Image (tube, rainbow, N blue to C red; front, side, top):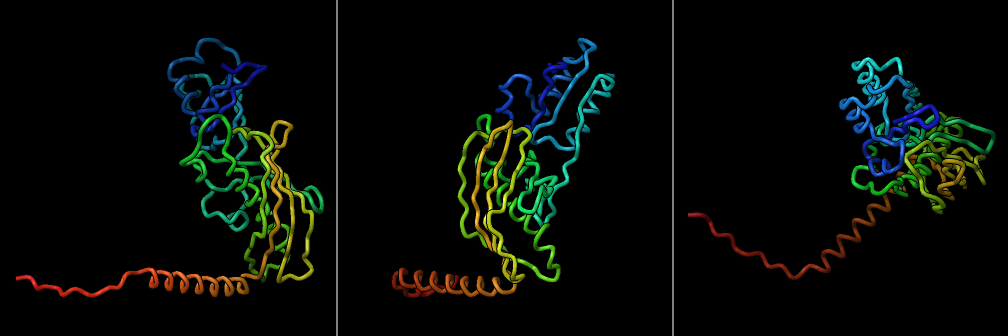
Length: 265
């Protein structure tokens, strides 16, 4: 049970493996404890803090359960709904897949955001084992971070233009496990070539910090081209790829002789 010195850390159900740690529970586990009367045994304050995977709906459901049992006056469970990067910034259609929240600018070249991992994020649907968060989350968070920073703080200076982003290189070093708790995404521009608004080129480092340690560091180089220019090039390359595949398929196919079709009686 949570105490004044050790609050309960609540995580989404996808992170059940993390609950082998003391004072960590999933939302479902907490609600089951409430059903069993665990928190009705004394009058001490109940301190809960949200980790990754806990949504506003989860927060409201927990409060409702405490209220129904007459325990709401003992509950200390703050929650701030994250300000997610927009669809056009993170380049994600579904909010459940957006990893960047509360994006801010520290100075000309450094930016930060909160890592936000929804319980139904696409990267968790078919892969979540052990206590840590899988490495693909860190890579995708780095990708979304450079897109969100570029869109909000650089591409926005040219609202009449629409950009298409091309990754030239992206290398990630994993330095420590990432767990389903609070984490900060730190972004530092190491080179910016933005004189020509038709072509914005950057190199940057993206680190994910948690519990005073860096979990991963991603070095990325990318360019934002005007969409119409790159889309035409992409289309031509796609045409060539389709033509090549067709030639290969024809060359590899055995000789084909049509067989007569007999009419049904």
